Amino acid sequence: MRIAMISEHASPLAAPGEEGAGGQNLHVAELAAALTDAGHEVRVYTRRDSPTLPETVPAADGYQVWHVPAGPARRVPADDLLPHIGEFGSWLADTWRHRGWTPDVAHAHYWTSGLAAVHASRRTRVPTVLTYHTLGSVKRRHQGAPDIGPPGRVGYERALGRAVDRVVVQSTDEVAELVRMGVPRSRMALVPAGVNQAVFRPDGPAAPRTPGRPRILTVGRMVERKGFLDVVRALPAVPDAECVVVGGPPADLLPADAFARRLSALAESCGVADRVRLLGGVPREEMGSWYRSADVLVAAPWYEPFGLTPLEAMACGVPVIGTDVGGIADSVVDGLTGDLVPPRDPRALGTALRRLLGDHVRRFTYATAALDRIRSRYSWRRCAEQLGAVYGTLVTAARPAPAVAC
Image (tube, rainbow, N blue to C red; front, side, top):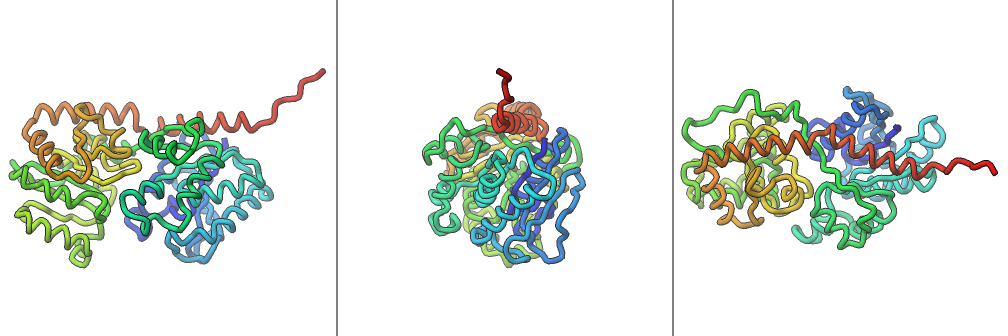
């Protein structure tokens, strides 16, 4: 099957840690690789953000990346790309109609990519699939209106849910949110993303640690909604444990980071500064050793559409204490693979940490169950198989019925 993946602001070729590179870049790259490995022909379309980029780049995993000339050939923040989406969609339509390769299905990632896909689909009749990754309505609820992106985003997302042929959702929480927005449940397919089990696995080296001191690990971007402040506020409840915080700029740039300074000041005021270590950003290939060095991963965001770090920790055989939000509520089975606590509740988090760190048998049981859950439910191979079935249904429905002789 020929699959066009549209990711206008998040190139799968971007290196983790690069400016503007985040979870969507990695998701698109690993999904494209998994679909290619499953036998599909995959082309990823992303915006040309440098004048030196060639039109087409073959990725090492066998798919192609096409750079679409839409807007200026320089980096533009994702929230400023809306004026260029029509140009992006027109280029897709013209290319699919006139250059000898028309996809069987187009899978858009993020709402602006969805707009481009629908624009192209109306000219080419290619079935469209959309993964939102984040929803403006959820961001507005938790962060306030100024942070959700361009005016009208929520309205566009609502309309897209009705315009595309299928919405691929990543958690049951996202299903409920879209139903509240008026998107028909019949248009949705729940397909969780995968985790790279070649990179994240239980065997392998572990980062050094102080003997006899429990280690809590927490990973993410240096922003308030990731819940790092709540983790620090919970630390007095576990007086023997250290907390390693991974994320943000490289270690040498942390002193200039406003949120890192705020986190350090809070640790000082809570009397735990000697037990909080800000590591800064870590290359992805080194993250497995940090997960394996931990007794528990804490994922304490206020909201989380999917939540990759809990899956990476579970794939390394590490139990998770997570907030009962979004995708974390699906991936962490409370009392089986880890514990769930309310968001923005340091007291509940501290109680859960003290209980789990004090119970070696429970940690071992959680870790074993977590690893089993990853292997059975969260592989990229399984994700590619499920998406292939979704695509196949749409392609079959789009084909005209054969003529019947009278």
